[in-house]
Length: 278
Ligand code: COA
Image (cartoon, rainbow, N blue to C red):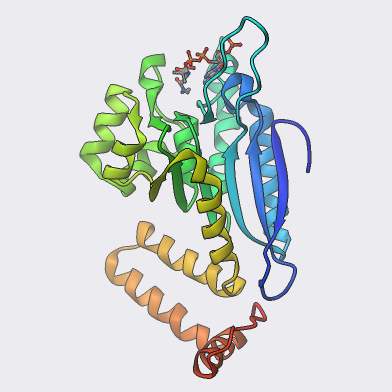
């Protein structure tokens, strides 16, 4: 486990093949600031994205927020948060030249560009850059006490971490407009209803439900999961007719892998596949 604004822990995946598979669990660790993402958080997230890409053992990444610290005597407890956005204190007095380099190389894109599956495990506020970080993950699971929104409009800003684009593709134009233009905060129930999150669970079950899914994904062939992610992602970028051709070509190419033969044989023998990851 590292220290700082991002804690990284590796959870061993029993039954993973090739053996040694781990789930990399990243905890945004600024609970006193509701895990707001400052430049240091971005640097750490980008660094760990690089680490994950070069580490074959990592099968899946789970991103979460650190729970609130116990309050100091006489002070009120902070609420739980995934991340309450970009760190607004870093915006003071900055002009476009100051912020451009940071936003051109940001953590949201780094997470989005990971070739491995990613899950956001959300408990509490996921606002602004927090919603955007969750949207940069492939799957979002949230507790029943979470909330979402793009309140940048209240600061005279708009989302800058891909929120307008990813939300639009996920939930459509009208709903995205409402969220971006009103800056309103929506509950997990609403987020679940309109498709921002995949699943809503009681907060006590959030970790077990999320980690069970991460484990299930991590037990697949690490080669095939990357292909699956790449191909589904293609649906966001490609015209439909090209996407279908791309899928077919990737499907056909999988017939040259060891893992296709291993998977098919295991099915026929009613045994567990022992993937080679190639
Ligand atoms: N950036 C920097 N600090 C933040 C922050 C952010 N995005 N969100 C919360 N914090 C800090 C607060 O300044 C406060 O710090 P302090 O205790 O040192 O004063 C601490 O986190 C707790 O937040 P607080 O506002 O006191 O909690 P609350 O329960 O009253 O309200 C929110 C919670 C989430 C509604 C409120 O913090 C909020 O609106 N945050 C900003 C959300 C936002 O606009 N995000 C988009 C940014 S681009």
